[in-house]
Length: 353
Ligand SMILES: *Cc1c(COP(=O)(O)O)cnc(C)c1O
Image (cartoon, rainbow, N blue to C red; front, side, top):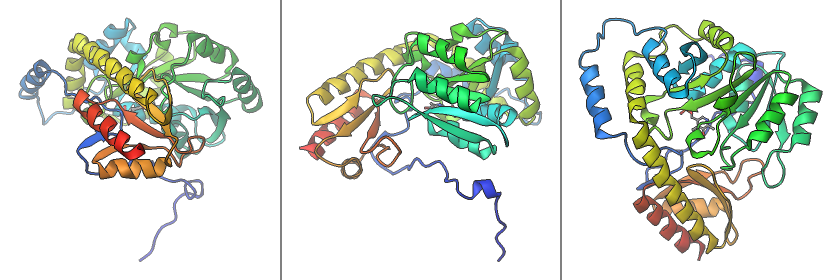
């Protein structure tokens, strides 16, 4: 058997890992704990029954783009949708990164920003955040001046820390960056402001969003960005034709009819998150107060890895970040339903006492 060698620059890369262990309570991937409303299911089933499966889907996803544009009060030409915001990021990086170009991240942050950039052959410069994981603008200046990144990533609220990036920081980064600034707002509905308000045709800024979290549609794989129309036009050249299947276009368009339900879910998650954090106050652990639907924490009496394993034995799965750089002994729990959160807190109490 002959194994063909991969590209030299891919040899050292590891894949993206998020173990899916079979447990009762799954709090590891920041999904919504509840399904979309029944009225969405009905509307989706009804439109699906009329779908012309023998035809290619609308290549431009015209109606979906129009619905997203209406939601944010922008022009449809400023919206690019793809199979999850990860494919949005990949398309962006295929278009603007690649060999001989540099992109910048400020760590710790969402691992896929650096990972996808490396897959395109780009050089990744990892800037450091402060010890408390807030953004260090001096470090941003150093990275921008020394490396002239073509794309600079921010993430707000940031995954895995849960910290919301203040508007003043995003504006400061936009001033310092010489290339494109990408603000990943996968958890944007949890924050008290959005960089969407800073988008215009003259500014090299894009904001990415997803249906996977607050919209309760991780199963659909749908995400988008809002940015200048000249940039969207370039992405449309790079993406594969007909990449968004017809059913997904319907699913996403109909989801946007249920904004109130989405916002109610966000409210419930926020109150459950605050309840988890109050419980954390009484336990032997450190945590980072979160502005999203997950909380990063660090047990004091047991190693992160041990705690993770013991939780799995209680049939509770959280994200093990303990081996990630800068996150020694840290775990990340997604806010679930009240029952799931009770099960998690009960198990954690047992495990740490
Ligand atoms: C979950 C998440 C995404 C979502 O990716 P999809 O491909 O849309 O499911 C993007 N960015 C961040 C920071 C996330 O945490």
